Length: 198
View 1 (cartoon, one colour):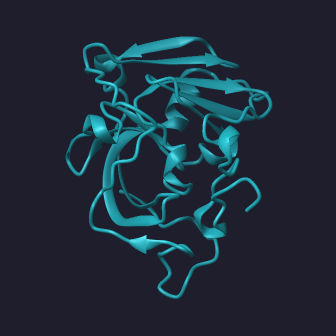
View 2: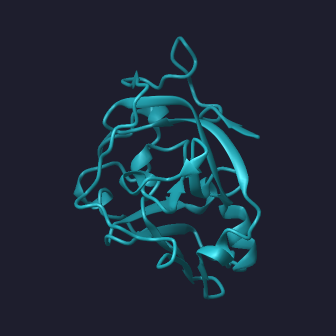
């Protein structure tokens, strides 16, 4: 079991709730536009860029080692949810399998709806990120990014791209959809990095 409490950044008084956040028991649904309806049969994950090009269908991908993750999650819209349970394939495993070049500095995540987001390589290695395929013991619902979504719980949740389609490893930073529209380029909840100049 992997326990992720936001790593070692500064905490508020209760130690778990980042500044400006409130705890919720619900799981609010926030999306850019209409929810893509991607089935397991039609889903595939592509790896491209500074790596060996690869593509896996659902059956192939779910044959990889699956990890259990218990962690808190934090949304830029100010809600936090404690002790969420997920299952997924570690990005470390994917990077090793695809022989990602050491020239890669960032990951660009691509979604089935055209959404993109950028993440530094350091923030997806060392047990910090997964491609999630289950939430609370069940398939991830379409509204929450199923059948598979990127999962990077130590950053604001917009970095955990829903309906994941491709992982592109690149040299240099290339801000994604929200990062070019006023959101912070990094998104650390403990530093309240919500918007560009935070």
